[in-house]
Length: 138
Image 1 (tube, one colour):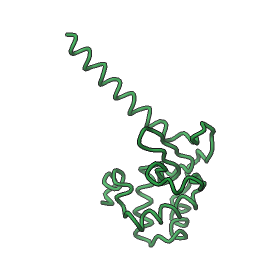
Image 2 (cartoon, rainbow, N blue to C red):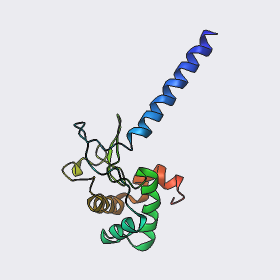
Image 3 (tube, rainbow, N blue to C red):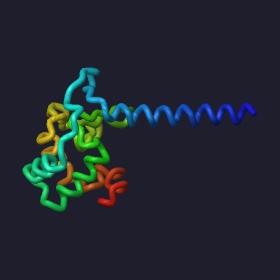
């Protein structure tokens, strides 16, 4: 009986931890704990326009629209932090994986997409592997 309680406790802890992380991804806080960025999602049309301005072709812009919907629900101020990530903005640019972008305003949609374009040129869709798989991009 004690083993069942221990297993149930561990599973509950894991569920709460994952659920908390998902909620946190929608809260626009920076690493100092200050709120920044917008909680209001941008439109698909605005995303597509900004993506093409950042250098994505039409197919890439459509694919990244799907990825951004998965990553941030198109919320520019989306922020997620854990041991392995500190991800910001529409495409959840991970500053632990890409520390060279720490000085940039990744909550700004145009900046986020411009940086995402640079990452995409070097890594392709694999930089957004989970959402690329989930959305059928990969």
